[in-house]
Length: 267
Image (cartoon, rainbow, N blue to C red; front, side, top):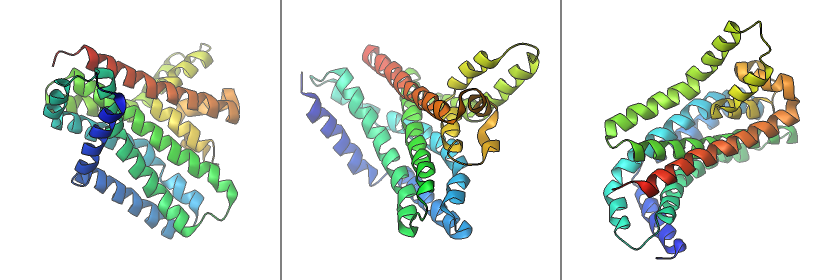
């Protein structure tokens, strides 16, 4: 079997060369950069700009990570099958493919968020926790939805069905989940629902990221129902720690399931 490092370097080098021609990643990075720069100029406040970027972090980052991940998987399938003919362990090849998919997006997002903030300067050190939590949550969601994209791409052969499945997954986690939790809480309002609500909150990475970001600001009304439950019963510090642990689990589980599917798949 070939060592892991050359395999990872080969795949990452190929993806980096492809990145220069990948308009999706470049447009996402430039779009994020322009949004942050525009909002900073309009508001004149780094804190307001970061809060205004909440929807981009919670909606656009997962959507772009999911769609580009699925499209990249199907676009590079022949190259992946060629690599599988070489004496390379599938687990190492999967790690290389996963990192090659999520690192450019995560790096582009972090750079696009950091550059305007550093250019304009962050006058108040109290804004730093909000900036770090916003950038960190966006990077974490890139890894979460990148893993989900690989899982869907490996499981579903047809490209169109993969894209539709990815869109439905994103729609459920980004939009439908909070409405579902609210409906459950309303239906069973006469029962003690604290623990079930906590469990439901941990079942959605978007809610976990939103909770981490909003707990560093004064805009508690933007938490959504599940985030409000977490804030109410765990408080700020414990709530942030629980949300970060939940996001870590969400990064590991989809990537592990995708790796298992990749290792057992008969290509």
